[in-house]
Length: 137
Image (tube, rainbow, N blue to C red; front, side):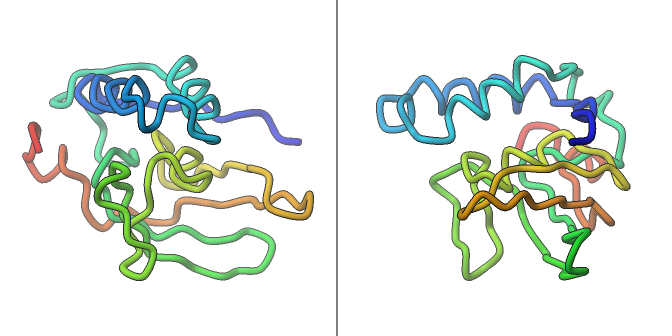
């Protein structure tokens, strides 16, 4: 398995995600411990200091399954805004927690049903709130 890439998270996203994880509805969610682990290893920066090539909350990204070549257009959202049909992926979903904080070109692996592992690469960020000046969205 490849080493886990470093990740960047804005202080605003960090605080909001922690609040979600502390809420009774999500405290014991199956993916909560994985997301807590991601936050624990993250470098936290002020929203205004976030590089434009990093996946943050509410970012719209193009990600590619390295093995199959399948491409996905995803928006990383909080659980209340998730909608799989619209490509709005919760940060609590395995793919959501996997892409949080990645830079364009970085890959991340995570377990899939049946014991298979998927490797996803972030190919593009079409919208990042911090780069667009939406620092407090």
